[in-house]
Length: 366
Ligand code: ATP
Ligand code: MG
Image (cartoon, rainbow, N blue to C red; front, side):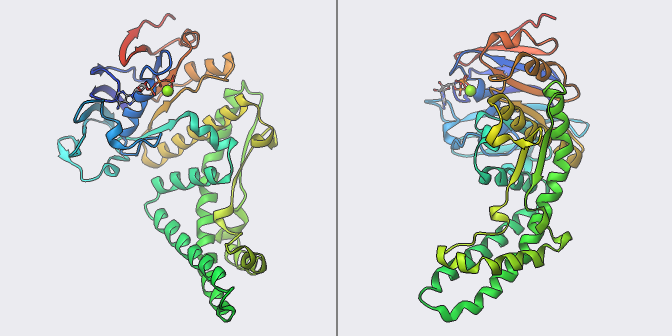
C-alpha cells in the first residue's frame, strides 16, 4: 500500500499537519523528544494494531485535548481509499465512509510492519520474544492460529495444575495421560505452523541480511521445534518427551517440554547471533527478520505493507545505512533518525526535519 496523504490532529506532541509522503522513501530526523516516534506510531495505529510501545489509547491524545484524529488517504489493492480514525471517549473508525466496529478489521487493507528499538530483543533476549514474534505473525496470517494457541495453552495450564495437585493426590496421575495426549496433538500442529512460517521467512531474511552486510555475511534461521511438527511424527515424539519429563515436571510443578519452550535460532556465518553477534550484527539480524515479515505478508495479502523503521540507523556502519536508504524500491518506507549525517546519504525520496512536533520538509540533494 502507499500512503498519499496523512493528516493528524491532536496526536501526542505533533502539531496539526498534512503530510504528503514520497511513495517510496521518507526520512524523519531531529533531536531527541521532538516527535519522530510519535509520527511512526500514528501511522502504525492506522493498521488497527495496538501501540508498538505499549501506550494506552488515551495517552496518544495530545495533552489537554479531548480527542485525536488521524486521516489517511492511501492506495491499497489497486484503489484509492480513505481511513478516518478518531481516538477519544468514543472511538470512531471509518474506512471509505463505512464504520468499522473494531480496529482489527482494518488489517489487510491498511497494514504495516514496524521495527522499533525494543525489537532488538528479537536477537538479544530470551526465546519467549522469538516465540512471540512467530506467533504474532502467524495470528495475522491465519485467523485459526489464535484458536490453536489458546487451546494449547489451556491444555498446558491443566497439565501444570495437575502436576502440582499430584503432590497431595498421587492417585490422580492417570489423568496426566489425557492432557499429554491433548498437548502432543495440539503441540505438533503448533510446531508445524511455526516451522512452515520459518521456512517462508528464511529466504527473505537471508537475502536481506546478505545485501545489508555488503554480501559478506550469511544469516541462518532454524526453528528448533521442527522435529515435533505433525508432518514428521511430531505427535509420537511429543508424547514420548512428555512421558520422559514427567518425573522432573512433577518436582518442578510445570511442563518443561513442548512448543512453549521452543526457540528460533538465529546465526550469522554459522554462529549464534545472540551469544556472539556484535551490536550492528544483532541490529541487522533483527531488521532482517522484520523485513522478511513484511515480504511474507506481501505474498499472503498480495499487497505490500508500509515499513516503519524507528531509530534504526544507530550502530549501523555507513555502507549498511546507505543500503537501507537507497537500495529499496517498490515499497513505501518511513524511517526516523537523530543524526543529520545519515540523512545526507539519502539520494532519492523525501526528508523531514521535526522540531517540537513541527514537521518541515527539506530538500534532498542528489
Ligand atoms: P527520540 O529520538 O528520543 O526517540 P522522538 O523524536 O522519537 O525522540 P517521541 O517519542 O516521538 O520523541 O516523543 C516526543 C515528545 O512527545 C516527548 O517529549 C513527550 O513528552 C511528548 N508526548 C508524549 N505523549 C504526549 C501527549 N499525549 N501529548 C503531548 N506530548 C506528548
Ligand atoms: Mg523515538
